[in-house]
Amino acid sequence: MGVGAPGEGLAGVELAIRTAMVKLGASLLEQLLGADTGYAGALIDCGAVHQARFVSYRHKTFDTVVGPISLSRAYYHCLDCRGGLVPKDHQLGMEGVSVSPGLRAMVDRVGETVPFAKASKLLAELAGIGFGPKRIERRAEADGAVLVAAADAEVAAASTGQLVALPVGDTPEKLYVAMDGTGIPMVAGELVGRKGKGEDGKARTREVKLAVAFTQTELDEEGYPVRDPGSSSYVATLEPVEHFGNLVAIEARRRGSDHAGAVVVLGDGSPWIWNLAAAHFPGATHIVDLYHAREHVHDLAKLIAPQLGAHYRRWVDDRIGQLNSGDIEGLCHAVRSLKLAVPASTAVESALAYFETNAERMRYAAFRAAGHFVGSGAVESGCKAVSGQRLKLSGMRWSEHGAAAILALRCQEASGRWEQIWQRLHNQTTVA
Image (cartoon, rainbow, N blue to C red; front, side, top):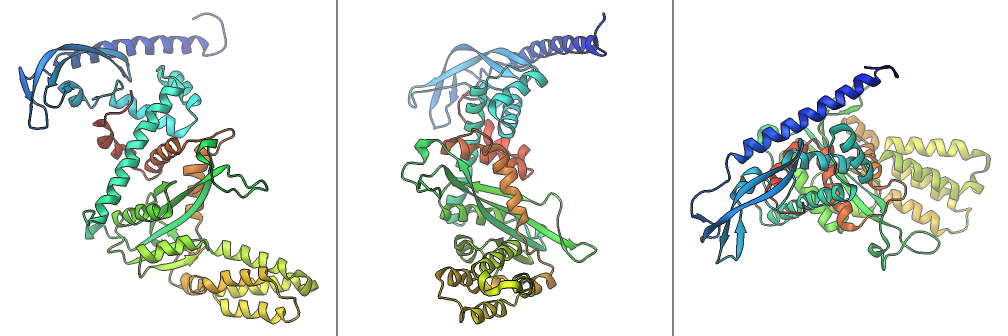
């Protein structure tokens, strides 16, 4: 093998053998698929109650996991529909595309996982497949758009009562639905007319609303709830909150919310979360994330720090204790007893309103006694893993179409449904 670094010669031999095997595989696949051209007689049903007439055999090159192959397929044309049909392409799941189902899945997987340029390099290095970054982008975004459209169709179906929950046998003991929002950077054209939080008032991001549904059946040795392994499923969208609410409700129904022993909604104090919870989950237990609530206690203490003086730390600890026990009335009373000596403050009243509005969602001692989660860490980590780690990397700017498509793919992957999406995708006519 010659002289060189240890393993260098073997690596070259491995690559040469793999290249030869891939070429052989492409030849065998081409022969196997080419044995049937899809010819089914002079006339066939076009699918719209018409007859399509055989025209000729046409060649097309398809990219596959073993390289490009060329197939001759029977082509039919329907005069009534004014369109062509290629039965073989439909049979193979490659109607309207030039990428095989296996390669399509590979391209979508790398495209949703890493930036498109890196995805192209990974395909070349690990699989020996040449697929440019722009083509990966078009392929992944086209397939993601199909998933977005499918979810929209489910919303429409649910509005007519066509969507049903899981069978009673799959009913969860306790189902959680946690919701949150996170910003992603967008191209300038997607931000026209939108206000931002920066000093210049210009928006640089759009909010992605994300929800995670998961189940819980056990407590750990210390009595804390444990999320059931593999039970998390995700939905995310840039669409308005009303549409997001419908998506969340459908996912919850799919997970068995209609018959669950208990449904618990988790979130921060954002009103939109609780408005959705009230609309879609009547009777559910609502819980404000305890750690967000603690942050609000600290923010409130800073507003009255001059009045607290040297007692600041002890005062904060006492209020946190009241919060942990769910004594929101006592917490607010402690603040208002100090306000007598403090000039009226809109900020203090606003801070107290947060606690008073969410008081019933902050009965943490009772929630813990019931074995409930009191933190929304599942959705916060979901925002980072599903959205942040792919759509918020340095230098990225997204179109709404592209962001929505990649989010759809990532939600499917994070939900453990990657293999389930291909039945929807194979028969779609999208970009090559």
